[in-house]
Amino acid sequence: MILKPTRKGLQLAQVLEKEGISNRRVLDTIASTPREHFIPDALKHKAYENTALPIGQGQTISQPYIVARMTELLLAQDVAPMHILEIGTGSGYQTAILTQLFKQVFSVERIKTLQFQAKRRLNQLDLHNVKMKHGDGWQGWASKAPYDAIIVTAAAKEVPQALIAQLSEHGRMVIPVGEGSQQLLCIDNKKEQRSQTSVETVKFVPLIAGELA
Ligand code: SAH
Image 1 (cartoon, protein in one colour):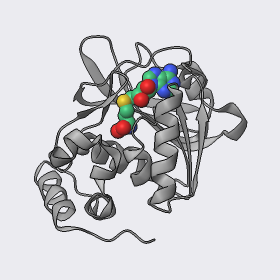
Image 2: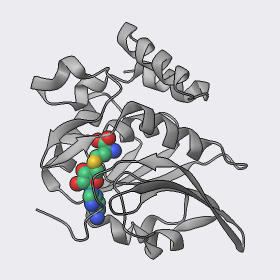
Image 3: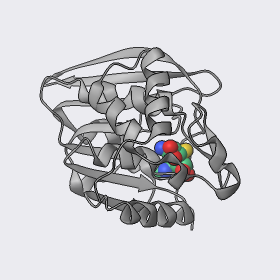
């Protein structure tokens, strides 16, 4: 199945473009990814609103704007990124976007039931270039490292050193950091030099240590 743009998807992409998202490939992917597929039945009517929504287990599907923003930051690298690690699979929506823009996606989720559901949803959409793991994202996924890009979709109280160690020598990581007020950080590895910029204030659920059955 190749995903095709829908009327509601195109409308959402237009809203995100007005909010400042400029990467055409990201906007096209938003337009053709069925967000309602990743949302509980009772909330499907809100699927194309630019808001985070509850997905059970106290977790949320991220706001489309932030999904697009983080994705375009990861794509804007000197060397085209191929291999990406996602921490916090959640609903699988961000994962679905990534599978269409990166060659191979690795995704870690600490809540087994969410991971299970996300895997089924991606299979149903024929998005297969993703490997998933139930585990603690603070540890990353060392055996598949290094990654050209790392995206963390839950807020860490500090940057996990294991993730820094798994970033390739030219890689980029985007991660919300902070307790209370959170900043979206963009961390660049340039051989020996590492730089960090603060992109914007964000609001994510916390990155909790340890896994949950
Ligand atoms: N990108 C997801 C965001 C889900 S919310 C989406 O749009 O649906 C953040 C997710 O991170 C939750 O599913 C939560 O269970 C997960 N999470 C929190 N701490 C984690 C950890 N240490 N390791 C892996 N996943 C974690």
